[in-house]
Image (cartoon, rainbow, N blue to C red):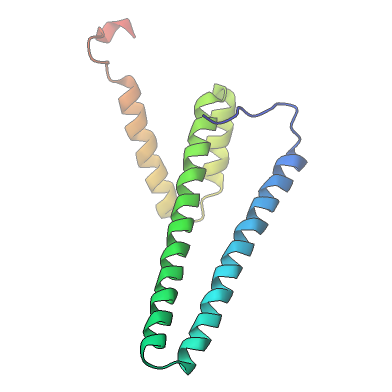
Length: 135
C-alpha cells in the first residue's frame, strides 16, 4: 500500500524526488546502452562461438531493458492508483483536470472521455443486491 501524501511535503521536495528518480532511470538506461554498444563492438570483431555468445548477451540485455521498463511503468501505475484511491475527492478532481489538460492529442481526450462515461455508468448502475431507488 502506498504511503499517503504528506500535506507538509513541499512541491519542491516532490519535484526533486521526481528528478532524482528520472536521473536514476536515465543512468540505468545509459549503462544498459553502453554495455550493449561494447558487446556489439566486441561482436563485430569476434568469430564463431564467441560471436554467438555475444549475440545471446546482447539479446539478454535487450530483454532486461524491456522488462525493467515494463516493471517501472507497472509500479508507477500501481503507486499512482493507490495514491488516488486514498486522496480526498477534491484532490482526485484536481488531478483529473490536470491530466486532461496535459493531453496532447484529440484522440487522447476522446479516450479519456470514453473512460469517464464508462466510469459514470458504472457508478450510476445499481449494485448487486442494492435497490436502485436507494441511491
